[in-house]
Each structure stands twice: as C-alpha cells, then as structure tokens.
Length: 325
Ligand code: ASP
Image (cartoon, rainbow, N blue to C red; front, side):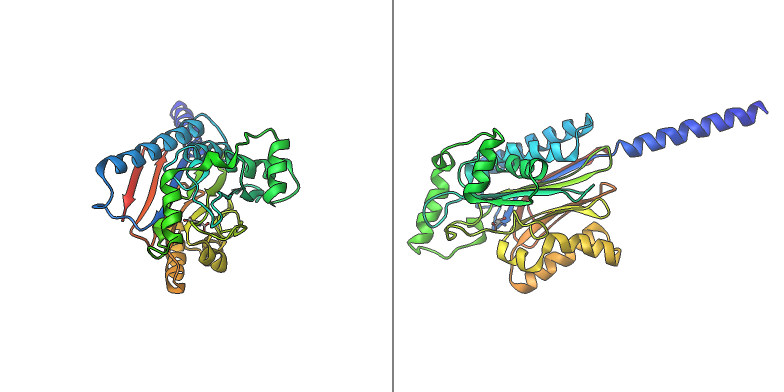
C-alpha cells in the first residue's frame, strides 16, 4: 500500500515538473537584414561589431522572457536596441528616400489574439516599433501612416526626433552613388531591416519588424515590413514570422501569412514552410529571408541571399549568431 502511495507521489511530482518545464519554455530569434554579404569584403572588426550588437539584443530578449515578460514586451525591447544602432536599416541607421529623407515602417503582431499594429512612412518617431505597439494596444486600427501616425505617436508620449536624427554618412553616400547611377541597386542597399520573433513562458508568440525601407525609394513608398501578412505575422496556432528583403516581392506573395498557412493547412514544420516560401520568392525573382518560431520553440532562419544577420537563444540552452550562408 505504502509502495503504491509513494509511487503515485513520485509520478505526480514528475508530471508537475514536466508541466512546469514545458510552461517555462521560451525562445527569441532575431534578424538584422538579408542581402549581398561576402566574408572577404567585410572586415573582421565589422563582423564582430554586428555580432556584438546581435548578441546584446538577444540577451535583452532572453532576460526578459526568462523573467516572465510577454513575447510582445521582449520583441519591442529587442527591436529598440537594433533601431538605436546605426548598423541597421531601422531607426537610427535608416536608409534614405530619393528626396534625401528617412521614412520608417514597422509592425508587430501577437499570436494569442491576432492583434496587430503598424506604422508606415513616419519621419520623426525615434523607435518606430514602439509606435506600432501603441497602434496595436491603444487604437482601434492596425496601420497608421505618415502625419497621422506621427501625431498619434506624439499623443502617446513616444520619443520624437527631427528627421536629421536618422542621418548617417554611409547611408547617405549609398543614396548619392545610386542617384549618380554609378552602379545598379543591389540588395546591399537595403540590408539592415530588423526583426524579432519570440515565444514567451506563457506560450504566446509575437513577431515584430522595423525598417527604413529601400535606398532611393520614392517618397511615400511603403514596403512589406508594416504590412501584416507580408513582412510580419504571428498566430499561436502556427508560428511567428518576420521578413527582410525586396519588399515588393514579399507583398505580392504574402510571404509571412503564407508560412503560417502552410503550417496550418499542410501540416508542415516551421522550417519546411519557410523553405517552401523562400523558394517561391526566388522563383519570382525576389531576394531576402525570414526568421520564424513555432509554438514549441522550434526556430527557422531561411534566406536566398549570401548572408543574413541573424541569431537565436532558447531556454534549452541553444544559441547561434551568424552572418553568412
Ligand atoms: N523589406 C524591406 C522593404 O522592402 C527592406 C529589407 O528588408 O531589406 O522595405
């Protein structure tokens, strides 16, 4: 009798531990843009700089998630770090429009309720991802653009800056070279869009993306990054996705939503869904990449360019930070 009782207690404890450890599962995945990158053309110091920033961002996400933060909180804080760095084409390091200004796009989506928020074509919000989150949480809309988005951000007491805050010499030179037609536009002219997807210990997914778009874009051009379903998507039933690359192709294919739909309707893994969708992107002539995570914390990072700044950390101790293929 005693043996049976002890046996039941041991089983109960084991089951409780199992449930607890499963509940505690979290992971964070980031990208800092896909594009033409060659190991020989990028100095060791430059590579180290990128990796250090990716690592810093990942650790911020990890610490938040470990301590019970929601995936939305983690996604916003991680993306803010990348937006504040001049290394990436988002926030501070945004590329220039043909008019010599910076117009920023960002979006966020939560997998638990399919709530989403986005802003497009803003010139004066220091951290566009915070404005996207405010649209999601504090408005009845999904996407605000231009002056209306800026006014909304100001009302929400978000940090506003002058457009010249986004000036960086290297991005400006890139614009000038393209405009003088010294060379063709390459995916390197846009590289640096940032994205983050996360699974929190409550079992919820979130995806966020932030970008300056494409160098020499027409003013008013909006890419895939703030378009829910194109450059960003999250659904607890399937996965959270953030895209980077030639936005027009991602919009036409509905890449982010397609990855979720492939998992839902064809029952494929997150990695298979990402591979299939990047395959279609290539067939159409588009370049770029995606990061994704499913509700069990499985991670995928797929791209058809020579590189994508990327990395992930999971609660099971897995970690990777990489640049080249
Ligand atoms: N997808 C972004 C855009 O088209 C650019 C990029 O990710 O490289 O605006």
